[in-house]
Length: 267
Image (tube, rainbow, N blue to C red; front, side, top):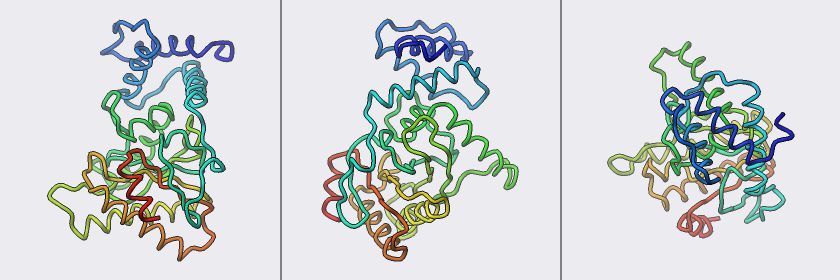
């Protein structure tokens, strides 16, 4: 069925399916315009707890998200210039990158962002990967809770690997960055460095040769952007010098002009 549908038909179908799936919003009035429908669909996906979903609807979601990826424009490794050595700086939406792994700045629950339409990278990655990503994160967290207790939360700087589903990337590495509450400390700086070092270790362990890092902890976790850039570049350079040839490319993906400026001064 889904192969014969247009993107507009898929969008209409999915809005109704996700409304039916939601007790609270099943009677929500659907907007008439495309942007309004996209807003509703993303919001319903964002708030949805991990649970079964009809296979037919899941197939439509996958085809719809594949179409959205094409609309946004897939960026391949060959499209990203090398800045120095195996390192690149690229400014833009990390969900467009067709690399072996992209890094998600996760929270300790590891289930993605539940705030509808939130601008954080966690929300964007889960939205465009599809609902299977939250389901896989939940399965992994269930396994960890069965081992460590029901109050288990993912520790800072301990990465988790998942499939990327409908993203152009092959995998997503989720890592919880340090939260700055009362100013920087050496411990917080070490935690941020470990986010980069342990993620690169995970890449090698899983034969992932290209990875795109977001600016970990610089959003709602309030790590100062300039210092975070220094730590990130220092950690990656140190790791690459100790593991020559291990990675084809390490990309610092920046979204803000401010972050681009800091990385360009350092790399």
